[in-house]
Length: 176
Image 1 (cartoon, one colour):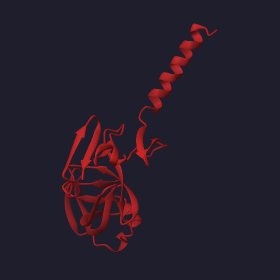
Image 2 (cartoon, rainbow, N blue to C red):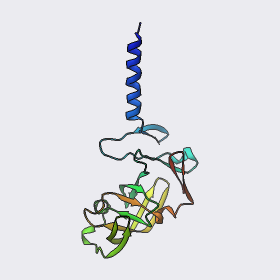
Image 3 (tube, helix red, strand yellow):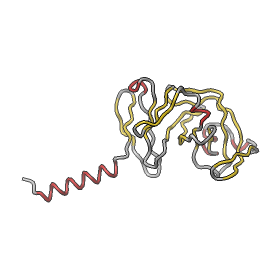
Image 4 (tube, rainbow, N blue to C red):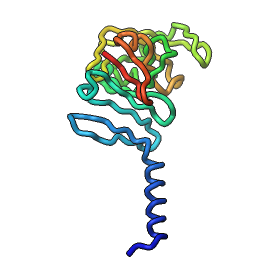
């Protein structure tokens, strides 16, 4: 028989595990539910099966309060934070390099007023950017100078290509 102290200890262990691992996101891929977890300092992000939501794409809120999604840029997976305050897609230098844009050869001559002050960036056209069933071609984006920005922003020029987007139950709902 189990003693009350063992049951209490087990309950505390379960509560601690739920508190620690509770921010995992349930992702749906190939009809199978999978857990996507935060590993180290990586941001948690998820994709969902669009068929389950009638074509909508849902991205769960991260524990930092932001919505992170991985999109394919010119065939390369790039992690973005969705930023409705950004007028357009903005790639970090490193992400632009990964997507094959050769940022070393770009002219960072375009001044942008950002939340952190004036920033000089280079303008590029992306051949293709996609998130599951949403694909956009020939869209403009900016590239930040090396070391200036450590995250890429998914801005309004991408979001405005959708029929709608909204926040619902701590999920960002994107409607193609």
